[in-house]
Length: 181
Picture 1: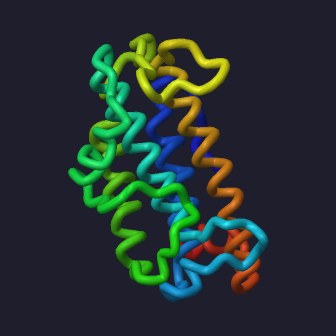
Picture 2 (picture 1 turned 120 degrees about the vertical axis):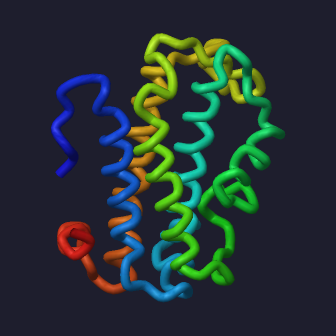
């Protein structure tokens, strides 16, 4: 279960909870299993984990830098500061990346959220979307929107990870989370 959400200061813990759910889904798997696509989905557990970690890190940095926009071409170098070597959509072939490396990357982002997340930016800050706009969006989003977006996106990916993991070896999220401690 997610932690109690009593105030806006709880956003970082909610994101950490969801990233930890993704982390649990990878526990005990081989690199090949973590990179496999056991369903019709093009996504793997390793891909979902890396994509989610990179999205969290990227949005938090974009919010921190507001009102200056973060250009799309800057994201790879910003991500490199915490160990990403490329951009991840979730569908890449990651059979070459040891599952321990994927877990280490998740841990770095979890630590970033834990240490930098609280107080990183004001919830009312306006974050310019620049070249990240999509149909129907305005020219900016707020800090509150960033936290809400991250909570929903990572939760969706954690749910998808549950299905992928069950398809690999039948392990359920509840037992994997309990084993994580």
